[in-house]
Length: 337
Ligand code: PHE
Image 1 (cartoon, helix red, strand yellow):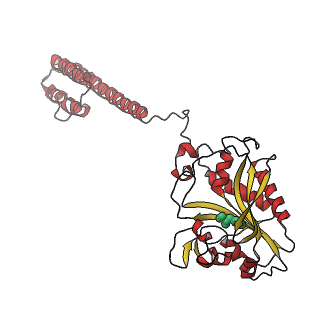
Image 2: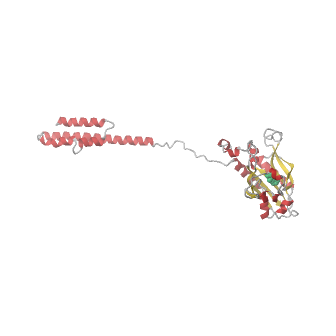
């Protein structure tokens, strides 16, 4: 019986040494109610009284050593599992985090806001008008009746005979003057549309900023001084401006206004195409017909207006040579601003 017990111990411990051993199965096989050790113990009645306690003691030792080994292996397995879990779920809190990328303003919005800031600083407020506009506001009230050649240069998209996408921000002048009596001092930034094919310098959708000042005794000198202040703030202190005679149906007299090239200072370079000057806007004194159309007496009041392309200002400012870059949505371009 002694041998039988030793053999059980040896066999059980051997089985337990296997890394894949099923601990519960081994426990049942040796220590369970019908287990091998139990059946040996059951047959102890056959032993002599002297032998019984010795065999009993040995049997207890065998059971204990098997139990111990089982619990040691169980603890080991649990530990291994925990280690594996810790390893797979490891978080290194010292690792640099993934920085959420924060966007920034589109270069056009940025330039627009800068322009707004400059004019707000000179006492202007912002007025808005609809993109979908009546022919009356976009053309007729601005002294451009049907059939007028100025319509050709501002051909746009028509929703019906009388409704169109505005080709300029000038209709906002009319809308403001209809509602508000002088003194008026507004700027109006926004989208404008023209049925132009898309190329490096043309786009069917672009942005303009209109300006309008109406009061008693407003002169061309006021226009010039105000634009000069704007140009210096926008393009740098040494910037000069120049007026060239031009024609707009809604201003009289009218001018196109250039700024001295901020790259070469006026000597001529690649940016100004050798001119020394860059055209940035159209301007003039509000035509008396336009004032009357809006119920403002041109004998009492006078005013000036100007309009400039925001893309044009941004392109000049940053040396961008293709208007399509603004809408291509290419992060390599946008990240530069
Ligand atoms: N609206 C004109 C254009 O789009 C610009 C302009 C505005 C000219 C105001 C004079 C006065 O060409």
